[in-house]
Image (cartoon, rainbow, N blue to C red; front, side, top):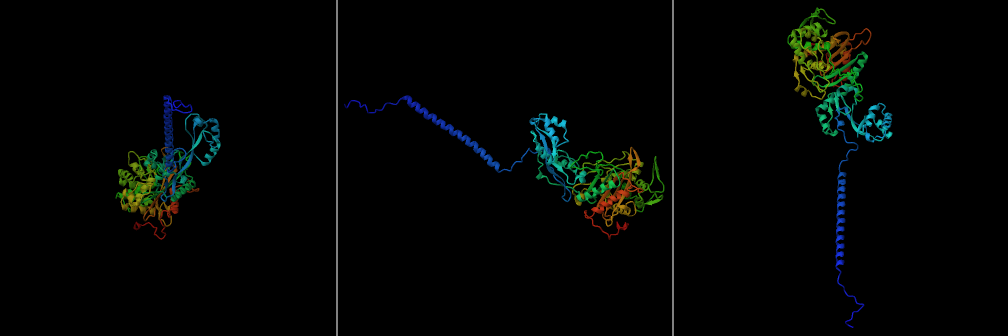
Amino acid sequence: MIGMLNPFRRTRQPADDTSIVMDSARKSTGGRTRNRVVMTMAVFFGIYAIIGGRLVYLGFQDPMPSGAPASRVTAARPDIVDRNGEVLATDIKTSSLFAEPRHIVDADEAIEKLSTVLPEIDYEQTYNKLKSGAGFVWLQRQLTPRQQSEIMQLGIPGVGFRTETRRFYPAGPTTAYIVGLTNIDNQGISGLEKYIDGQGLADLQQSGLALPKDLAPVRLSIDLRVQHIVHDEITAAMDRYKAIAAGAVVLNAKTGEVVAMASVPDFDPNNPIHAQDKDRLNRMSAGLYEMGSTVKSFTTAMALDSGKATLNSTFDATRPITIGRQTIRDFHGKGRVLTLPEVFIYSSNIGSAREADIVGIEGHREFLHRLGILERMQTELPEVARPVEPKVWKKVHSITASFGHGFTTTPLQTAVGAAALMNGGYLMNPTFLMRSAEEAMANAKRVINEKTSADMRYLYRLNAEKGSGKRAEVPGYRVGGKTGTAEKVVNGRYVSGKRFNAFLAAFPMDDPQYIVLSVIDEPQSEKPGMGATAGLNAAPIVANIIRRSAAMLGVEPDFGHENTATLASY
């Protein structure tokens, strides 16, 4: 029995080879699957870690500006301020309307809706833009906040707004011809705005480096308070004398700084729809005129500076001078021999011609060039005209030029030349930027001697006391000056009924600090029976400007000072 098998006993059987292989394969496949899962999870964890890290990094950065990217063509410009820091021009943000034609569903409907807010919109032009299929087109630049709000409420698909920069001029027309103007892309096109672009701002804008925080204000020599006075006075004078234009300038005789300058008619740079009108011209620097008897200041100074005449010299004015077809007469002739001071205060054309004759033709022409009267003026303002003179000077040209006829120049450079007569004999290029007396003298050029300057100060004061400049008197400020009443040339001929009047003044005459020049174009008589000469209209403009602005300019009145012009005073 021992040898018999027990039916209930388990015995071990040898392992099957196939089972072993399948078991091994299952184990291997399971391992590879786990590896793939791990690798996939690692990749995803890595991607999320990078995204998370980037988000953390961005969280610590300055936020990017919202909206469309900044436009180079409307890049920032520096503020322009007056000598006291008052803002004359600054950037403001504005919205402009654009469209994406590819997203416009109905062009006609879009234009119809827009015209309810923008009635001036050009239907045909806008329709062509919206049907162009372009990705981006401008519809209207520089909207008002109200226009933007109303257009948004229209809910037109495919249109949007872009924030841009535009220029704002707080003083409006008052400083229009000096500060100038920018175009729709905020680029300077006239005045000091254009000058600033020419000094490198345009290059900064093109390179994207014109950032507001990096642009220091440009400080001008203009005093806005005095500028308001000048603008107010010439505007009132133009209306009072029914003139077609008027202008004035206040110039620092010691530095050449233009403290105020205005011309009317003018325009509003914030809405320059009249800027291109034919009568909108900065007559002070871009207008060319025969300056009439104000030029006798230079003729007399020339005679004195040549050494061929003194204050005691006399000139025969008993009869007119005839040269060729021209006869030179005096407006109010004395019919006698005149002393040099009498030639000046009586504004004798004959006497002035005699003064020019002793210097000679070439000497006369050279002197006017020396004082810059016949040179193109060098200054920051782009709108500067080039004087016109005869190509070849003959005796007749010298004679007529002696009393301000036969050549044209600008009022501003007439004032600049007068400053040299008053400040001791130094010619300084005018500037619209701040400049100290030391800086001015470093580049100044002596054009007459000190004695000539002292004599001219005496003559200016004498003319205000006893001559044609009486209406320019301002008590306490010792004003001196010279009138100029010039007949205008129309179609090549002088017309007696049309005048260009001027008054060239300085104050205070014991040590002139400022030159004031006023001009008025084709003035009429203020009252029936009154004349319309410079002494009756241009001189009062100067008096009013000095009376209102002298204290602001730091010139204190001196009512105890002897006003009478004597040689000993100078």
